[in-house]
Length: 591
Image (cartoon, rainbow, N blue to C red; front, side, top):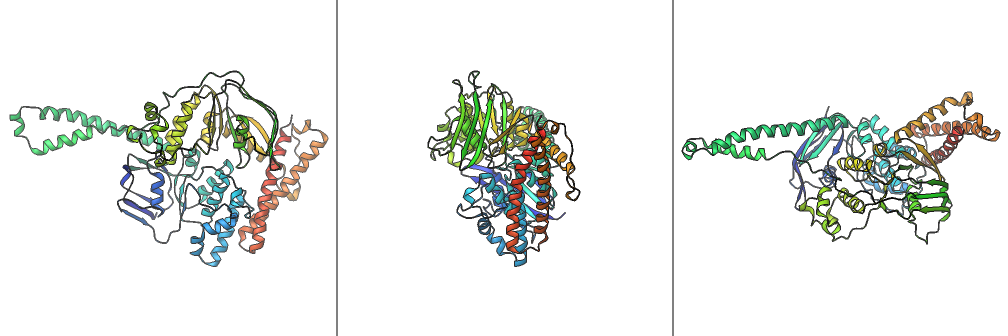
């Protein structure tokens, strides 16, 4: 395989802090690499240097294979809110579009619309300011994928994406012959996409061929071998020390190199591998929690003519752990704010029903936005407990660092500490995995598994949800909330099984939908049976139409105006299909 990228002797410091120094590595054609490191150790800085957005402090050498196409996805997409999706992509991809000919530009727009349609963004006339954070991220990824680059460099591509979008990106990258270097904390995504893990550790780079499980195993072997070698050196050092301490008369006849070797051994013996590990062992637990938590009865919320919650009735229990899932824009954060009474009284939304909260509630709310730290505030001024700061990987030499100089992940870790130290008995986490490194996530998961309070989590991190929650509230759209008992993986498997069962009902439109008499359908009313049959026919027809339009777009033969209308129609079909499929599931499950 050809060498796509050769790195030699690059370094980066941030103030007095050395992120990495004189590192080097090689990336070959077909490598799909996940870059792993604790927050604040230079992952984003390294990617930006490789993408030409920043420079190495030490010069060094970065050599890409000649004539390969490179595309870079930054963590934050720089966009103009007043532009439409199409206008924004034209502006964002301007340099790339200027480097290719007219025919390839037509192909680029065809590929872009196909990706946007698969991301449920078929209407490219929508203004960027109307999009959710996850939808903005999907625009950025579609713009990148449409370049059909040979080499993708991606910084946290799954941040803010809903599961459907993550699975689409996952499927694309698995099938693609591209070369990939990415930073990600999504362990399922990493496991399914990458064939190599690269670790940036104590300023050095270690490469592990294989999946995430292999990385964990081989990394531990490396650390164990390093420390075992150190033990051997210490034994030799003891013998050398006896010699060094022998009588002056005996020592004068010894060679100078023996003395020099002694000091080298002493340095090596002191170099036991140690890890800066986040620890939650000393973080206080939850305050006492009463029997009444949050009781909802026929709660509904409507804003701008759209229902975000409709007739929701549920009493949250002590110590339960529930996950909130749904597509971007389904209203997950709105749902949390309603539960906690965090809406401004002047908000024009329409609320009905009741939501009552227990008197003993002490809520810790970890929001996506975080808290506003003062620009001049130091780490120690934010949290005065030096012992806890040390447990949260803020060593003594970082205590006087201004918060504004911390990395995104370090700020999130500090924010998490400010919440946990208040001993909340109801912990509400809105996308807590964004910007946190894998080590921090593993420790946080262990803490939350033992957390003695009520836990409510909004997350698209499938691994995180699988380890923690007992059941899920699924926000299906139009205010509907379904309760699924089980893990997130079980929920996705259930959906796929139902999809497979439904597909078997009407495999070919030409034959007409085959009516399958299900046990649940036998208990439906006459009107509901007719509705179920009509839904099957409608879904089959919509899927046929979507497949035909997708094929036409992919052919490369459609005029620009028809291409635009076809892409918009695919977006409409996807929305209609989602609604009809959810209604089909509801009727088919009815007892």
